[in-house]
Length: 79
Image (cartoon, rainbow, N blue to C red; front, side):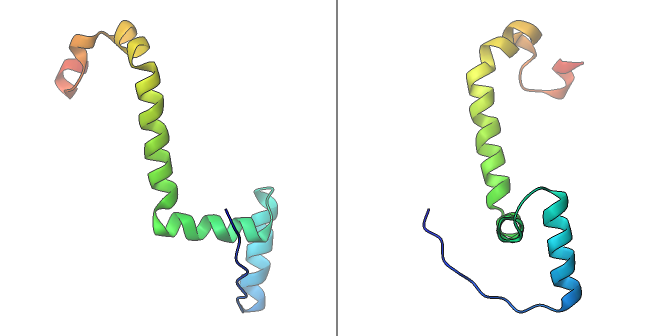
């Protein structure tokens, strides 16, 4: 994906907090802010749901064998 430079002015406290949080997470400030924007716009949530759906599709037979296909669907059938 092509990157676009974005210059943002923030106060010293916000800049310090961004640097500290990025460092705690082992990432650059650019990556940290990019992830914050993605989370805010819901992109991360959509990506998670898509990945979870792919995982379930890949392993649906394993889950059916372990828990039984007849238990699929309702909460009551899981009890």
